[in-house]
Length: 411
Image (cartoon, rainbow, N blue to C red; front, side):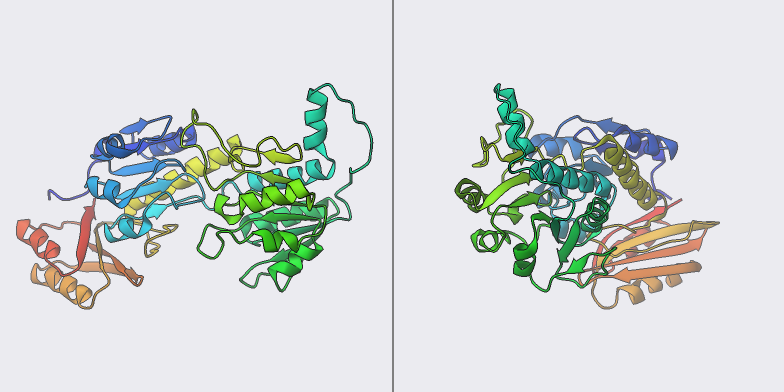
């Protein structure tokens, strides 16, 4: 029938922002060869034009998929964010357009954790300042102000996948670890929880942040929280740029309240490689500034490329939505002598009854049925007899079901 899924060589995949070769290699290994790669991001009409006929789109952090952009891509069935964050996509709009969004929440965990621990060591040894001085011809060999991390206390704000990895690495170097999270978490090793954020700030020699970008975390580190820190402590932010009030941090560094900081993410970052980076932290000799590279290792990008490509292929091939951030998650068995039907609909009463009535009235035998909903969207997968034969009336009846967002059949 005409609305069976497209042959794989007809499914168009567009990848932006120099996504790793591992993604392309995985697509190729599963029979997807209609792939276009771009080294940078696009916006506006150029972005709309590029994805107008795309079935799957892969992006990193610079490409913005707004409601307007998503609505212009009528063939788009899935989005892959080849990174941890997904705030560059209008997730609500994608959900109500029936477009699941996938990401890679764990693949760069080790890369970020290693950078954080390395920055803690470098700051405790006064490396930012000593490096700058030496480049200018100085030769400051004094031990004053330089310390081992062994025996010092690391405070971790956000004890998730990255935070726990940092905890393990820090303990292996002899640090004492304290952590704070709004959700009760099982301690790793000898780490100890703090009851409040201010308690953690007061006991830590180094504070590192590992929280998502939410309404609750934006500007969570402001002047009062910095004031609660030990005099001469250090702050590391490799999480999200809007978590820290940069002006308050700059003031604390200038005043000597904090001895140093390492910042990898910023409230406002350059949109492209040619744009200048502006920050009140520029020029400070006791600050490590890096251009959002916490997860930018070849190992991490290789893992991210494969992980997200695999999720996109599984959704295209069998309808699996495991790992979708904006969509009901359904784990599905492989197809065996069946045609699989995917139906995405608004979560309103009566959809399943109407759907089953359409199948029944067209004398179609159902082999299996899988359903998952969230407050706004329902996702049902129906396996029917392989020799399914139905005409235009069948498709029209499916489209007419109240709340239908989109549907497709898989061979």
